[in-house]
Length: 200
Image (cartoon, rainbow, N blue to C red; front, side, top):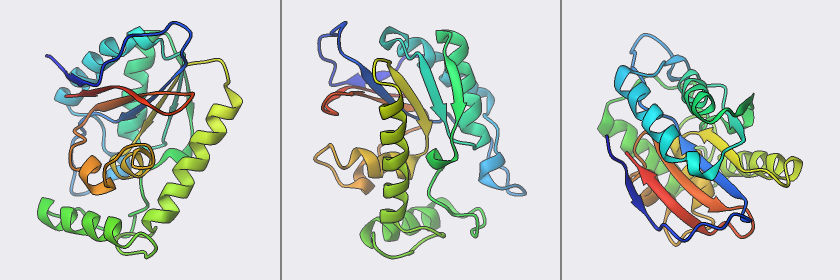
C-alpha cells in the first residue's frame, strides 16, 4: 500500500526531527467510548506501512496518548523501529467524554464550531484554546527532556491540527479535514519547518 508524501526536502543527518502522527484507523463501536476503540485490520496494516515509511527518520522515542488506538499505533511503530514508548495523557484528544458517537455530519459540524469559537467550550468539554495549550505544553516538555533525539508523538486529529496551525499557513479546520488516519507530519525540531507529510 503506497503513501502520499509531499514537501520532502533533502535529509540532513545532523537535523533532529519531531514526527507528529495521527493514529491509524480504529474499529468504531457505538457501545464503547472512542478512547477504548482498537485498531481495525486495515488500521493495523496502514500502521505497519507508516512505520516502515518513517523509519528513515529513526524515531528513537515514541510518546503516545492513553487512548487504545494511539497506543496500538505506537506499538507497531516501535516494533518496526526498535523504539521505546512512553504514555502521556496530555497528548490525548480534545476532551469529548460527554458526547455519544455522532453521525459524520454532526461530528464535522461540532468540530467546525470548536475551531470557529476557540475561546469557548463549543463542542465537548474543552475549548480549542485549552486543547492547544495542553498539547503545546506537553510537546514542549517532551522536547526539553530529550534534546538530542528524534521524537515521534502519536496523538489525535483535533489537537494535532491545532498544534500544526501555529507553524503552517492553514486554518486548524483545513488541516484537520485533510488529516486521514494515519498521517505523519515530519518537522524540524529546530524551527518546526515541515520536512515531509505522509498521508494514507
